[in-house]
Image (cartoon, rainbow, N blue to C red; front, side):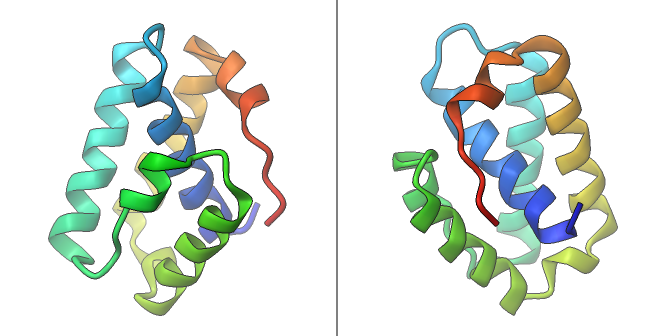
Length: 104
């Protein structure tokens, strides 16, 4: 799976999870870690649009472009955390996977 796709998918799942009351704490913690990493290392990447509309393919596409511009795909910590978040969703909240459509 393409690295940027993994990051965007994880961020979208985390943002959607914040809107859903039954989201497992581990998913929310991993999302918070990703937010902090982006804020510290890539302050130009804004998650506000994603947090408002995590299911929007257009918003996901724009985020992917922003992440590409800052070469976030080379950030091993960010990528590893993204994969852990996706795995946590699959294990603890698989219904979130059904709520998002990914076309990237």
